[in-house]
Every structure is written in C-alpha cells, then in structure tokens.
Image 1 (cartoon, rainbow, N blue to C red):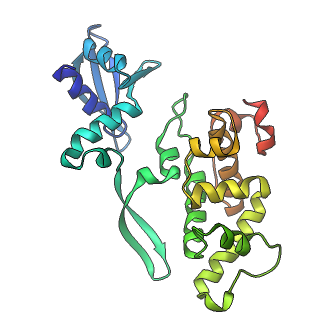
Image 2 (cartoon, rainbow, N blue to C red; image 1 turned 90 degrees about the vertical axis):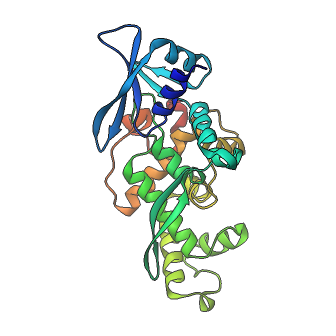
Image 3 (tube, helix red, strand yellow; image 1 turned 180 degrees about the vertical axis):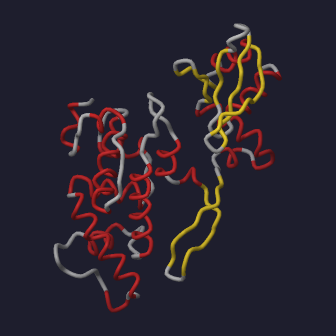
Length: 265
C-alpha cells in the first residue's frame, strides 16, 4: 500500500478516530480523532488511500464514517510491536486499578485478554457500545469476586462453592474473611440472575471466554452471543443496583430473559 494509506491506517487506529469525506474536496478524506469528548482534526488524505484500506479489509465504511477494522488494528499493532512480532499485535496494555483486601492497586493489564473490555470498546451498528458502563462494572464486580473467592479456575470447586442453595462455601475454615465474603456475594449474585445466566457469566467474567467461544460451546448462531451477554450483564447490573441504559434491539424491546432471543434474532 502507499505511504498515504499506511498513515491513514495508523490514524484510524487511534482511540475514537474516524474518517469523513472532505466536504470541500470529494477526492480527499479528513481524519477526526476523539480526545476527551472533543473531536480534533487528524489530517487530510487522498480518497484513494481510504479505498485501498477498504479493499484490503483494513477499514470499512459505517454510514458516512470510515473506521479501522479488526484486521487493520492488528496490522498497526504488529508494525508497532517490531521485534515482539506476532505476540505484540494481540497485546493491548492499559493501567487499571484493582480492588484487593489490602486496598486499591494500580497494575498494567492486557485488556485484549478480557472479553468485558472487548465488549466495552466495540461499537454496535448504531455506534453505541456493545455493553454500557453499568453492565461493564457489573461484570468487573463479578470477576473480582470470583478471583477473591479463590474459586477460579477449578470448575468442580466453583460449583461446589456456589451452586448450593443455603449451604456455606466449601472449606470456610481455611478461607480468609474476605474470601468468605466474596463467596457470599457470588452466591447472591448468581442466584439473582438465575440458572440460565449464572453459568454464562462465570464463563464470561471468570474464565474470560469471548463471544465466539460462548457461541461455539453453546451451539448458538453467530451474533447471538452479544444479545444474550447484554441480557445477562443487564440482570447482574440490576442485582447490584447499577443504573443502566437500554442498548441495541434487545434493550429497546425490553427483553429480560435469554429465552426470548428468538424475538430479536
């Protein structure tokens, strides 16, 4: 590809960036970059550069906006990784604060490993995030409790500790107070969302299974996963008392159970 196309691709890969047709010149594309809610100019590029990216599946038009594709973002990460090669393109490092019994700890994590971060950063066809802030926070709470409770990744231990109705978690005498409290919160949360969603949420938030894996494991049709995950995280957010906004067709129709998936499929 031309140098202009490579520069445009690098610009589109920036957070919140998109391209628009230049209103003053049909042969040009203007790059806009979002920074703190403000859209800034990112330069002007030949329309041929945009066509080249689309032709190589590195970018795509969504309405009037040109955005980077997964393949395009991976190409940029691969070039930036240099000597790290293939591993680098799959690494998206970010600084986050984790809640621990000793207090908050600032650590560097690979957000590409978390399906919750993936869902929060990806946009639906209407431009809204696949999950809203309340759903993301609900999933992170469940993830923290699963980790703090010491119930991952053992599947047998997980259900021994969580699936009983009123019984205590396995081995409470050996657990710390924070571990016992985390298990109690987990039991309450998974009982609140119901059996249809409990296993799904443990796979998503605990075992970090992405949408494609969830769909394949459960035999769901393509793109059904995001609908069910929205419903599950929405119910979890309700349990935690987190305010949320309806998102996508499922939210707009007031769907509350995954059994109603056929209504939106």
